[in-house]
Image (cartoon, rainbow, N blue to C red; front, side):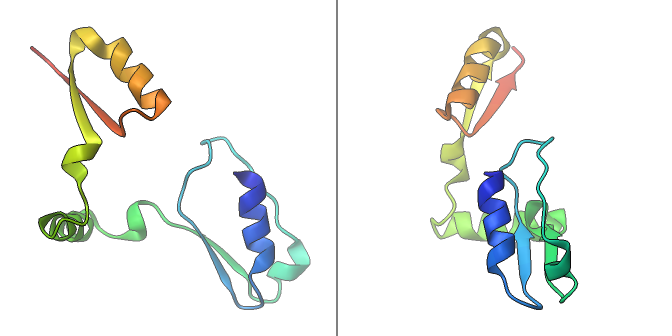
Length: 103
């Protein structure tokens, strides 16, 4: 993942912007050529699309209403007794968002 990010930073030209949207481990580090950034190259991070929660939720619900964002298919609920299974499913990619329920 980091190698791809560094290649993306190298690929953009003068006054270009590389937008980081996530995916690397939280402790990941990358490097960039200092001289190339002096010519206006920008590296910008974005969290949650860099929108306010109200804007983001409204936009995602609008996409869901027209069938373009199936968030209801990305969530799976587990009773608290199945927490280990929820963790395994999340790590394996079986589920995107595991939600534990208290019963």
